Length: 294
Image 1 (cartoon, one colour):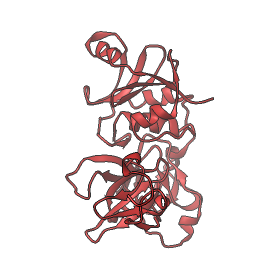
Image 2 (cartoon, rainbow, N blue to C red; image 1 turned 30 degrees about the vertical axis):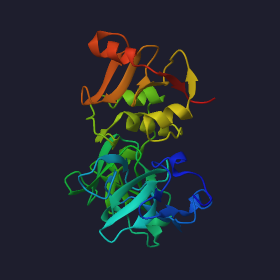
Image 3 (cartoon, rainbow, N blue to C red; image 1 turned 135 degrees about the horizontal axis):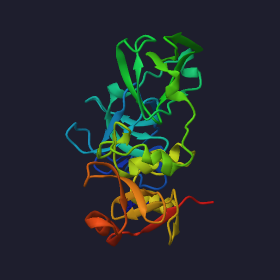
Image 4 (cartoon, rainbow, N blue to C red; image 1 turned 180 degrees about the vertical axis):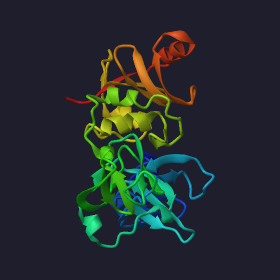
């Protein structure tokens, strides 16, 4: 190659480059050879619905992650077929998504207000401030909704907040009552397992650990191996540590008990390492524990 580093040294999950089309994001200028055309990513955000990021610009390709409503994104390329190559900014993860899932970026008062951060596991945006009104969107823990007003609307003893596109009950944005990531992870028990999912409507193992850590201001990368590399390895687990396996991760509740989203139960469940058939398999495959750096 004429200058730059080998493509094999880059991680295609977080480094945007297309060897076939010879296109790459501008931040890789100087790291890739001059046969690439370099483009500047454009700021964007997720719209009112969760946005599926896929491995390829094809609705039948595997989901690799999700963007939650209102999350900050950047678009590498908008394709003429209605797909965008983009990344979620909080973890730098790349995927392909339909452009209709992106929010309009036109300036407006709603977009200039601080977003309303959702703390409820699941909820809805309603067309009007009433539980009988039409539901216009689903929300979830981690969603950030552009606000339309600072004033609450009372209805039937309930308090509502205006957001872009409708109203959400104020209880959905109250401070978390959980004291740590392990306690929050336990509230996800029985949530369906969904490959690439990142919400209480359905998630995978690293989606769960990433979500419950982020709720307490601890940003983690997207995948289990990335999370393991980001944490300090420890020999003995304590509450809130992560347990790592080949392609899998769980949140420890103590020295042996663990809560995790898994395809064996097809849900979030609690296991004890070394106990029962599944627990024995997990303990045999344990790679180690990770703790948030102090």
